[in-house]
Picture 1 (tube, rainbow, N blue to C red):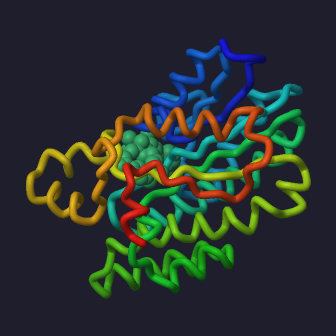
Picture 2 (picture 1 turned 180 degrees about the horizontal axis):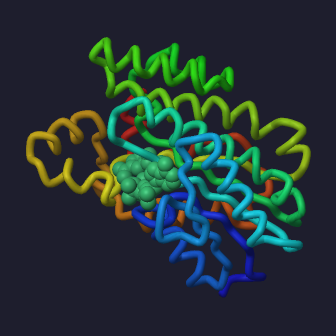
Length: 257
Ligand SMILES: NC(=O)c1ccc[n+]([C@@H]2O[C@H](COP(=O)([O-])OP(=O)(O)OC[C@H]3O[C@@H](n4cnc5c(N)ncnc54)[C@H](O)[C@@H]3O)[C@@H](O)[C@H]2O)c1
């Protein structure tokens, strides 16, 4: 165990990066409250406002009179479609906002979002703008329009680009930085999880992915590489980082400039 045990919420904890992060936190003696569609302490569907409200209420019940020290938002969808807007963007920001009062009770509250290298790729401005305006119906309509226009792949990039921009303005606000709550993000490159299993095992898709996300430093990442970076963002030692998107991507983002 490292230091005093902390209580950390992990969304998307039933698989991939979330499962690995939860496991690592537990191995260090922390208490994890997992949130996912199934196989979690709090089973909730983050694709709907009511599901998100259920998730926040479920966590609040488990925290009780205690303290919530951290939140990691790993729940996400890669299958192209409007639902990505609801899970990847609103499923993240509503949890951060909803759990803020519980986080504010901690002596060292930390939030770590999971963004993506895709946030650097072509996005749909209407989806991004509607997300940042906080309008889920408008964002869903813009995403449906992108699908109809033959650009469904832009939705994922749009949700992650919007998340990065929301992070930058939220992290420095009265509610977060001024309340001592550090909010930052890790943006992974390609990580070997169930999300990418099919893609990397298909030579054609693998070639597309390798061209889009070249990773000269050590290639595809195991989920542990992302989990360790997330753990640092969550640590009490992370006292002065706010609103940063840290690319843990084998150098892919550096190659874009
Ligand atoms: N794997 C990669 O290469 C990669 C790269 C960049 C970013 N990411 C991001 O990392 C995060 C984790 O991805 P992963 O690779 O571990 O994927 P994964 O598919 O293994 O895990 C995602 C988890 O999110 C949960 N989830 C999905 N929809 C949900 C909903 N409506 N409500 C509640 N939970 C829901 C799933 O049940 C699953 O347990 C995602 O945000 C993803 O966009 C992944």
